[in-house]
Length: 79
Image (cartoon, rainbow, N blue to C red; front, top):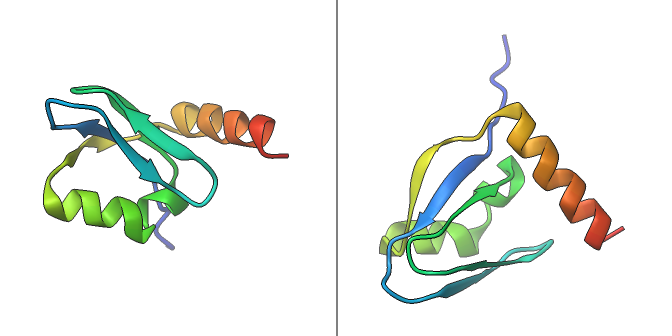
């Protein structure tokens, strides 16, 4: 059975805002703020760099409903 990739909930670990440039959007997170990223965004180099530097951390995998909501929002702003 093929493995289904999931998105994730990430959190800004810094005490100041950060911006992560993703292919489809700019992820702006205030200090301590959390956001959902899609499975394809989770594999982007810019996000992986922040994970390695520990400026953001994975909180948990996203649910199908959370992913669907973020995909709709991205499509709405980038048709």
